[in-house]
Amino acid sequence: MWTGANMLHCTNFHPADGTSWIDTCQWSEAALTHLPEVLKHYPADSDQNAFSLFRTLVYKEADQTYAPVLGSAQSSINAIHVNFSLELICMANVIVEDLWSYDNALPWMEAIMAAVEQNQVKVRVIEENANSNGLENRVAILVFTDELEKRGLEDFVEIQFFNGRVRAKTALIDQELLILGSQNFHYSSWGEKGLNEYSVATDDSEAITLYQNSAQNLKHTASSHVETV
Image (tube, rainbow, N blue to C red; front, side):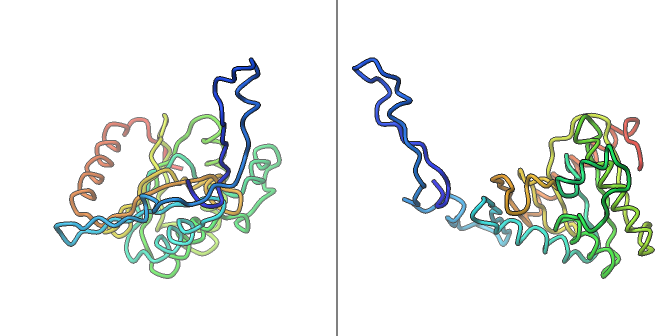
């Protein structure tokens, strides 16, 4: 259990008096009773590294690491993400056009923009184009690409839609650091009210090669179903 989380404790699942076991349950604040798995260290037989990026309503270490890593890119960012969104309120743009702007960008988007502007980083992103995810992604991508054009940076970024389900939340920075897990490029995964998320970052060359091969296979398999924005 993580400090700051809520814990439901039930004392009796089979009450003898016929009352519901639910009546024996009480909410309390969880307390840390052992070292969390993500804080344990496992020595490796090589010089490859891997570390955890975890976030909750209380701990924002993942936010504080993920965005700066994107912003520190020197040559490339290659990402496959189910989401590519602005702040939650920007969904209203589906009804009222041009209501929101780049001022509603989330930290990950600002970091990518900074990497492009400061280091001329090449960015390639594949996004989902289905249901509400597709709608949110389109709103954010239009705002993002408009801002790129204002800054004369549009040639550095390629964003594509995959016409199907995309569940990946991955980013490869400079072909050297791979981040994959549950944290989306989405308002539900960032900020004060974001969900609990967990990702792993690694510079393991074998893992990066496997990822690159998988991404390339996805591109070839879906080539006829990819629409460039």
